[in-house]
Image 1 (tube, one colour):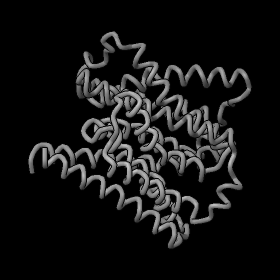
Image 2 (image 1 turned 180 degrees about the horizontal axis):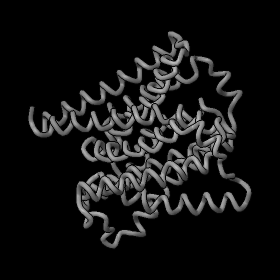
Image 3 (image 1 turned 60 degrees about the horizontal axis):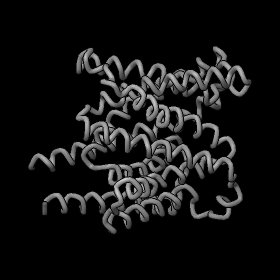
Length: 309
């Protein structure tokens, strides 16, 4: 196996680790919120602890000198705020107005949104086969989430909530593109980009949470709520580490190919639900198979292009 193939396989593993982490994250978040920890403080706790954890790992592995912004403080803060504060706050608030079905389907729009952003910035278009894989993967996700009941989906729609969820997804698409630029152009490691951007983005999370508390939109979680969701909080803090593997995977596969793996997140969430006793229909299984096939097709096509070049 040549070096490029080794890097490609490693990147796929990185992205699979990420989507597994995110697939676990959604059930944990839902349970924590239902236990009495609101979205503001759930984000606050997760990223204050998570940023510290990632930063410690960076200093241990790459040294204190790596924890320097090299004149890019404002840039890292801006995009870190968009990626971490924007994604989490808009998701938690938006899902309150909309539904979980809509949230997951809008998340599955990430490949198409990444495609649009890349077209705008680079004035270039991905191969038509990649576009085809995106559309097939999204169609599979729609089947998984709706179970073929599209009338129920339309009946539960909320325009404001959907706009907020769409904005949350756009935030992560923008952050992913920025992180990829930092890694490829400035030759920063995925760990360094994650640690610095999350640390500076957490400053915005702290300010937003405290402001929301003063204005009455957020409230301190009770000790009972914290104890009841301690496992969920632990999972959420640990899953901040998968952002490192996300950035590392995107580095090699590219934004458009990499974000296709996002379509696996709801599939993994459904697998967790199945283990918890949730009954999965044939339509849901069919949707999962379509999504997996789209990812495999795109990966095989990408490998073929690498071999030819």
